[in-house]
Length: 277
Picture 1 (cartoon, rainbow, N blue to C red):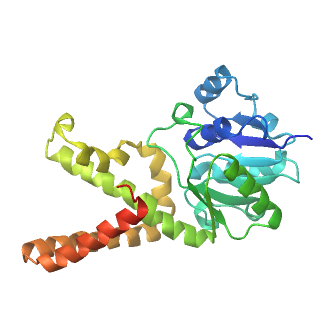
Picture 2 (picture 1 turned 30 degrees about the horizontal axis):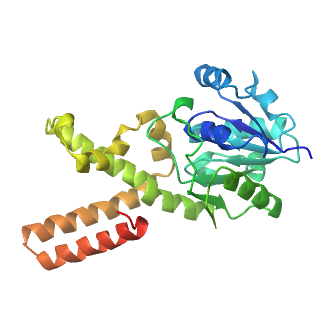
Picture 3 (picture 1 turned 120 degrees about the vertical axis):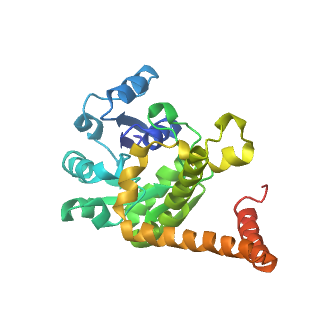
């Protein structure tokens, strides 16, 4: 039986991890990146990296567009032209709404958002890991066809995802603003506050290190995501500001009851997210 061909455009942390995670007996995998360094690194490790995106897309069964959100529309157009008409085209963007991605009608009709809730504050093929998606959840656009659903589920299950959620692009973007973009900004704000207070980073304990881990992400990784949905992100930030204000007010009034209620709510949520914590 001929194995399906998976073409991955973008060999950063997400795309590179797909290339590394798909077993050779499950699919033929090809990858390409606009980064010569990432291409060279992948080739040196024995992965199939053609010289052009067109060569990567030829005969593809599934195309995965794993590029920054500002490049998805351009790459989707190339994939739509060069990949077989029968190919399923997926993207891994942290936002999925058509307007945020600036997709034209043709590209929107071909490409489906499939966002894995996994990643790293590091970037490039060097940050890719074969186990990156082990146990993760993936949010897939609910407008998919039956065949797109089958192939998307096959792909993400094949690289280790354990949960597949189907939701609209708009629902996805609101959720990501709260559980992905907001934690990044909160971590960055905390690290910036400690830096402004001239705290020696080497002197802090695991609490400060853990809560500021995301602050190690590069600005280039995030700027387009943060600008893609300004109203949605503003609402998420407003909610965080309200919670911080509630903590300040409780501390100022020595309102232990209100502080405990907020504390217990947060503790219960965190334990549900990670029972071992």
